[in-house]
Structure formats: C-alpha cells, structure tokens
Length: 256
Image 1 (tube, rainbow, N blue to C red):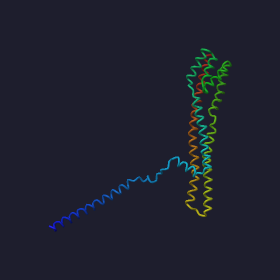
Image 2: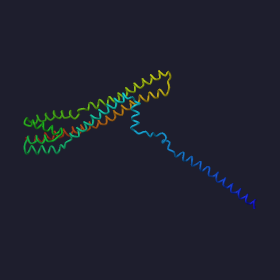
Image 3: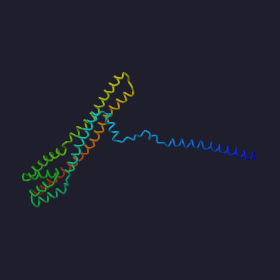
C-alpha cells in the first residue's frame, strides 16, 4: 500500500514538473510579445507643452535677434491685417451701384447721381463722383478724370504694402545675421577651450541655426498675407475698370 502511494506521489510530481516546463516558454513568449508591443516613440515623446517648447527655442536662439524677428512678425501682421480690413470695406456691389446711378441720372440728373455716390462707400463710388463733377465738360474730360482718380484709389489700396515687403526681406536677413554671430561665438568657445569638442560645436551650431529658422518662418507667414492682399487688390482693380467703362457708356448714352 505504501509502495503504491509512493508511486502515485512520484507520478503527480512528474506531471506538475512537466506542466511547469511547458508553461515557462509560453510565459517567456508573452513577455517578449508585451515588450515588442511597447511604442518605441513613447519614450522619446516630450510631455512639455508647445508654448513652453517655443519659449525654450526662443531663449536658445538668443533674446536679441529673436526679439527683432518677432517684432518684424508683429509689425508685418499689423499692417497686413489693416490692409485686409480696408480692402474688405472697399468691396462694392458695382452692378447695383451702376443701376442706382443710371436710375438717378434719368430721374434727377447729375445732382441726384452725386447724392447716390456720396451715400455709397468704396473706391468705385468715389470714382463715379469725380466723374460726375466734370460731366458738363464732356465725355473726354470725364474719362481722363476717371483714369486719374482710379490711379489715386489704387495707390490708397496699396498703401503700407511696402512695409510688409520690407519685413519679409528683413526677417530672414536678421536670422542669417544671428546665425553668423552664433557661429562666431561657437568658434570663440572652441578657441577658449583649446579643443574641438563635439559638444561645443553642436551647441553653437544649434543656437546659430535657430535664428535662421525663426526668420524664415516669419518671412513665409508674411509672404502668404502679402500675396493674399495683392490678389484682393487685383480683383478690386478689375472691378473698378469694368465699372468705369460701364459708367462712361451710361453717360454717353444719356448725352446722346
């Protein structure tokens, strides 16, 4: 009886040992799979917020040159936004204005048409008003007046764009200047250390290139606004020319 019990106990122990050996590779496989499922980029991701990162890069690039680059961005955006608002206010429904002016000329003559132009905002209405002021001097005089005053209105729409173009040119130039100064400082640090250390060279190059990146980003942002403003001016100038031609045709028909 004791012998049978011993045999049973030995059988159970052998079964448990074999089961543990079979489970060991499976556990190792699960550990390997869990290790491979870990995101390799998670460890490299920074939990630092974006504004804090920008602040850090700003300080690393040097407060002097980076401040000048930021000033170019602020002033350029201020002028660009002011021009966009001005051009939005210059937008006029030229077709409706022409119909009103033509109806006023038929009903009350030139004086009535002048009142319509005075009550309407925009460069097109101003051009019509200047033309009506000289309606009694003939169509040729009206055409010359419209052309001359149209040039004045174009100059008003383009006012301030030269400053935006200046900031577009200055921002990357300041960035390159900051890069050159940073390179000089890096070489000074190498000379002072008496050894070309990779850390010294890499640190100096990093600080120098940050200003270039900042200047190029500012120039790209202002360039987008600059081109948008130019496209709006082109659209308004085409509308002004078409409306002026239609206005002269209307005066010619009424005179006949």
